[in-house]
Image (cartoon, rainbow, N blue to C red; front, side, top):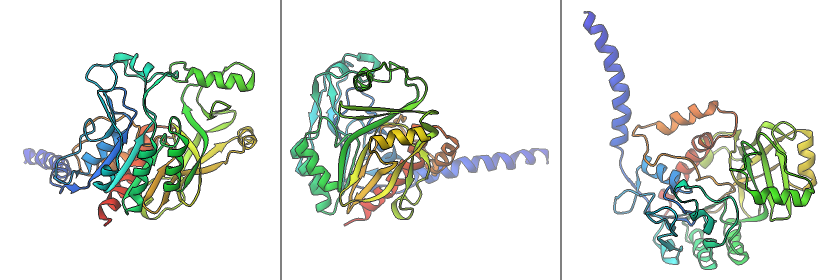
Length: 375
C-alpha cells in the first residue's frame, strides 16, 4: 500500500508533463505563405525578426508545402556572412512578385547595416555611432510593392524603423498612405541607465548638449526623445516620469487585441505617428510628473499617441516590437505562451520579455489567424 501512495503523485506529474507535450507535438500544421523583410542583420543573431519566427514555429505556421519557416533563411534583406566582421553575404530587396505569392507581408526593420557595425566583429553589438551605410532603407520600389498587399486583401504589417531614417521621403510617403499614418519625425527610447556610454549613443548626448548648451549629466533610468538632430528631450524616472513611465494600452479591447494586456510598460524604441485614415487599436500612454507633463507640452507632444493602428488589412506598430531576446527554439509545450503571459505580469518596470509575452504574442497570434482565414 505504501508503494501505491507514491505511484499516484508520480502518475499525476507524468500526465501533467505528457499531455501538454503531446498536445504540442500533435497539433496540425497551419500553412501560411508570408514574406518577412529585415535589412538590419549585421550579425548572425537575427535579433530584429527572430522572435516572430519563434512564434511561427511554436504555433506550427509553415510554408504552403508544409515545411517549417527558418529564421536564418526565410526572410528578405541582409544575410550575414559566416565570419563576424565581414559585410553581408547577400542582400535581397522586397519585390512585387514576393507580395503576389504571400498572404502576409511583414516589414520588421529597414534601418540597415553600417560600416562600424561590422568592426565590432565577434562582439555582435551594433555600433553606437553613425557610420557610412552599407545596405538599408526602404526603396520606393519596395514601398510600392508593400502597398499592394492591402489593396489585394492581404495583410501588411510594418513597424519601427520602417518610416524613419534612412528611408527616403518618397518611399515613406507611399507607405504612410498605405498604413494610414503620418510620421512626426519624433522617436524615443527607454534606457535603464542614462549614464551608460555603452548603451546611450554619443550622438544623442551631443544633440542634447548642442540644443541645451549644457553637458549630459543624467543617471538612472529614463526616456530620451529625439526629432531629427534638432531636438532632444530627456524624461528621467523620478523627476519627470513615474516608475512605469510609458505604457501600452488597448483602445479597442475586442477582436484582434482581445487577449493582449493593458498597462504594459514599453521597454524599447518607439516613434510618434498621427492617424491619417487608420484606426487606433492601442496607444502609448505617458505617466509623468507635473514637471514631465510641462516638458512634453512645451514640445507639443501628446500624452497619449498611437502604438498600434490598422487601416483595412494594413497594420503599423509604432515600436520595435519584434526585437526581443529570444532563444531560437520554442519550448515544446502546449499553452506555454499563456503561462509566460501570466508569469511576466508580475514585472512593473519596462521589460522586453514582459512586453513580448503580454502584448506582442497574443496580438500577433490573432493577426496570423486572421491572415490565414482571409481569402
